[in-house]
Length: 370
Ligand SMILES: NC(=O)c1ccc[n+]([C@@H]2O[C@H](COP(=O)([O-])OP(=O)(O)OC[C@H]3O[C@@H](n4cnc5c(N)ncnc54)[C@H](O)[C@@H]3O)[C@@H](O)[C@H]2O)c1
Ligand SMILES: O=C(O)C(=O)C[C@]1(C(=O)O)C=C[C@@H](O)C=C1
Image (cartoon, rainbow, N blue to C red; front, top):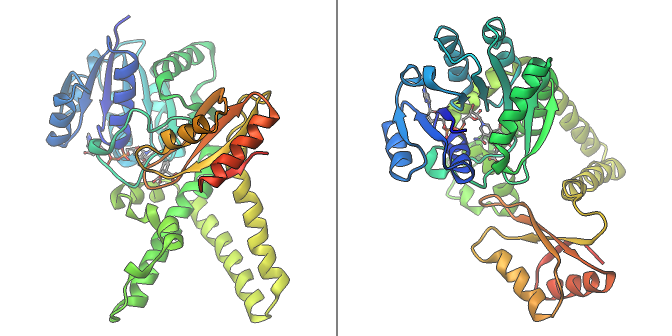
C-alpha cells in the first residue's frame, strides 16, 4: 500500500533515510520538511522527495509515518506541536535523535492519545551535515537503536514491525534498549568521545597560538582521533544538554583515568603505563572481529580498505589474479575518511591462507585470517 512519509529535518540523517526509502519503496510518497529552502530544492531536484515544505503543519495531518530528524531540541518542540494536530489514527511517529530519555518522556503527549511513538537512533553518521552529505548506504551494517519504553503492547509491537519493514533497506542491525540504557551507552561511546576530540583540538590550538608552527603538522593519530571535532556545534550542544548528568559522571570517570596515568608517570611506573595501553589495544583490536559474526561455517578473513574509489575492486582483483575463489564479500564498515573493513568468505582453509598471503603481499592490511 502506498504510504505518505513526512521527514522533518532533511539533513544528513533525514536525507539518507529518504534516499534509502526511495530506493526500496519508489511507490511511497516522501514529503520533506526543513527550514532550509536550499535543502528542499536540492532534494526535490534529485527526486529524493516528492514535495517540500518549511512547516511541519503543512502535511503532518496527511502522513502515515512521520520521522523527526532535526536537532534534538527541535524534535521535542515538534512533538509538542504534533500533539495538538489532528493526525491519522494509525500514524507512526518516530525520531532519530541522538539522546532518548528526554524525548521518550515527551512521548507521553502521544501515548496519552493512543498515538504510536517509537524512539529510534541509527548509530552511524558523519561530521558532515546537510542533505548534500546524505547517502542511501550511510547506515549499512550499523546498529539502529529502538527504544523499548513505548513498545509495551501488541499494537505498539505491530507498529514497530511496520517501521522496521519500511526501513529494511537501510540494512541495519536493530537493537532494543530502554531510553535510560541508551543514554548511558551513547554517553560512553559517542558523546564523551566528541567532548574529548574537541578538547584535544582546542588544547592544541591554544598550545600553537603565537607560534609559527601549526596544527598542520599533525599526522594520522591526531587527525583520526579528532575527525569528529568537525561536527556541527549546534547539534552537539543539543546532545550534551539532553544527556547532562550522565555526561557529568562520565567526565569525572575519565578525569580519574587521566589522573591514574599521571600518577604512573610521576612514579615512572612502567608496568602501569604499559598495562594502560595493552588493555586498550586488546579491546580495540577486538571491535571489528566482534562486529562480524556472519557465516560462521565459512573461512573468513577481514581486510582493512582505504576510503577511496576502487578499493573494493582492488581486493577482488588481487584474489582473481591469484585464482582464489571468493564465495562471499561483505562490507562491514566504510565511512568517509575512515578505513573500511571487508569480510571475505572462502570455502576452505587453503583458499583462506592463500588469500591472506596474496592480500598481504599486495600491501593490504589483513585483520584476521590464516
Ligand atoms: N550526524 C550524525 O552523525 C547523527 C547520527 C545519528 C543521529 N543523529 C541525529 O539526527 C538528527 C539530525 O542530525 P543530522 O546530522 O542530520 O543534522 P543536519 O544538520 O545534517 O540536519 C538537520 C536538519 O534539520 C533542519 N532543521 C533545523 N531546524 C529545523 C526546524 N525547526 N524545522 C525543520 N527542519 C529543521 C536543518 O535545516 C537541517 O537540514 C539530530 O537529532 C542528531 O542528533 C545525527
Ligand atoms: O561518524 C561520526 O562522525 C559520528 O560522530 C557518528 C555518531 C557517533 O558518535 O558515532 C554521532 C552521533 C550519533 O548520534 C551517532 C553516531
